Length: 209
Ligand SMILES: N[C@@H](CCC(=O)N[C@@H](CS)C(=O)NCC(=O)O)C(=O)O
Image (cartoon, rainbow, N blue to C red; front, side, top):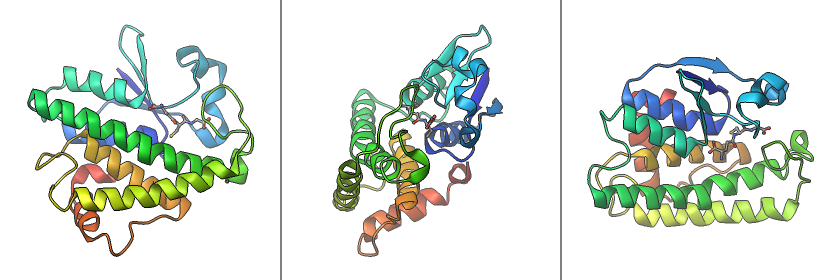
């Protein structure tokens, strides 16, 4: 099995942390996005959507999308379950993870890709070019302020994103909040619950992945 990664990019980092939590090491191939290697004919042959991460199985099957890759890894490496231990927990993890993507990941991506000069005409990842829309960046920053406030309230009564259980939702949140620094949005000082959570997850060895 081969893991196609880019050491500097947030989406594959979600998979790297997931693998580290499972204690699994895979053969890893770096795709240098800064050099445009995602557009090479060889890579587009295995992933026409020209993005990382990608997991290639030994029979050649390719799995794209962080959530699909992590779901697959959860099934073949069931130790240390990260998608919930009970039906209710699995539903809660799925729900929170989706909210974090919608309210957090897409917010940072909008803020970053719609303002950074190097992404002119590349406002969305993938094979198609899209012009930057500065208003989307503004909305992304506003969404991030709201995300900080919402997570702060949530963590007043929860140790992790889902109760007292460390899950893939915490991996998503950690990656998203570190990605938010790219648009100069650190966790505000007054968000003491969120800062407590952040310290806690950053102490896990997987956070270095
Ligand atoms: N929905 C995809 C998003 C993957 C994604 O956005 N990957 C970025 C790196 S973080 C990428 O490959 N970008 C290529 C580009 O910007 O051309 C997933 O969940 O895997």
